[in-house]
Length: 118
Image 1 (tube, rainbow, N blue to C red):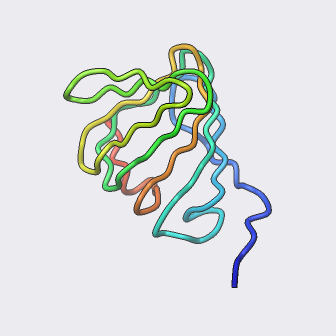
Image 2: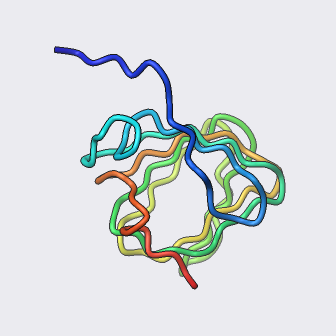
């Protein structure tokens, strides 16, 4: 039977500035460890510590620019574009001009599997 997710759970974000994370599907909101889907709203100048997650992350940028820094360089992902970051690859996300985007993690995001830099 289909299950309605009527509202998201607000998750506290890591980073130097406040960022909104509304998890619709995932460990916290829907008790779904297989997958997480969250809407992110990041202000201009936001950045978080680097990480080496145990999950693949797929991000679709709705507005602004999501900057993705990896060992291979820097990608600026603009509105209407998407990026795939494979698991076990070091990555750092930032939003130099602000951004709204949807992040999908497979399996679902958990604090114990993101492995943020100290």
